[in-house]
Image (cartoon, rainbow, N blue to C red; front, side, top):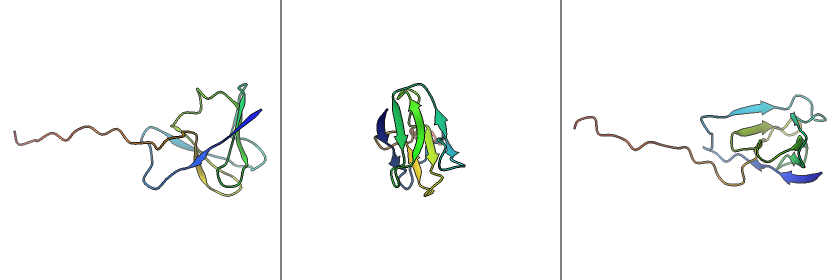
Length: 91
């Protein structure tokens, strides 16, 4: 399997449409699939998702490592929350 390192979630970077999966046991990945990539923790290298296809490891997938408690995200770029422009209520 090819290994991909997830990245740490930056302060203030919380997508409103995603949740955080918690790894209960450090020796068991949170997700298992039939893809070609293993995703590991950005801090300690613990396997968080095994055999996953990148199509399923989107910006919405966050995992808290069971070994070091770091919250990891699969997205390689910073997640920016979509904001609607503020409308003037007076007019």
